Structures are given as structure tokens and as C-alpha cells.
Image 1 (cartoon, helix red, strand yellow):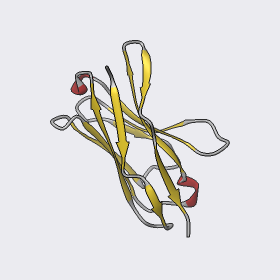
Image 2 (tube, rainbow, N blue to C red):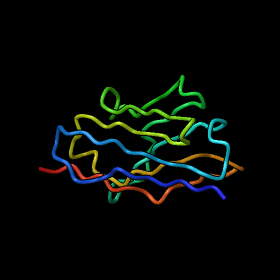
Image 3 (cartoon, rainbow, N blue to C red):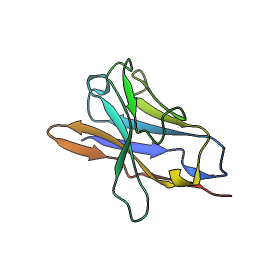
Length: 116
């Protein structure tokens, strides 16, 4: 059974940092690209960052380029999202995602709130 569990969200002030983690079980982690999405209230879920199987390649939404960094530790079956210089518009529920067995699998999400 595929399981993704996010952690690390919270309430921070503008300009501060957070690191999200997503631990996975139920599949061979190092064989799948991983993604972080987010969904703000009243908005569609959007792709924030993606990383290849070995971590050599990554891509980002324009809105987070230069501020967010996705990484993975295949030995720990964990993908991370380092978020620096957070802005109020980054406020959202952040989800870990993998496309596996012909469908999207999601974690439960972790809330990130950026507010002064």
C-alpha cells in the first residue's frame, strides 16, 4: 500500500524558512520521480517542484524559483522541500505526490501559513 506522510508545516512570518518532509512506504522509492504540490484556499492545486529519481534533475514553478529547493534521500525514502524567504502568497496546504501504478498518490497535506 502506497503511503505518503508530510510533516514540517507551520505558521511563520514573511521572510522566514520552513523545511517540509515527506516519508513514503509501499513502493521502491528510488524508481519514481517525486513532486510537491500546493493548494491555496479557493485555488486549484498547483505543482510547486519536481525531482527525478536520483535527484539529478529538478524543476520549479516560476513563483518559487530561487526560494524553494526540492531534494531527496533515497536511503531514507524521504523527499524534502526547503522553503526560504517565504511570502504570504505561499500560504497553502502542501502535498507530496507520486504518479504510480497508473494513478496519482497523495499525502494528507501539511498546512503552511505565512503571516505577520
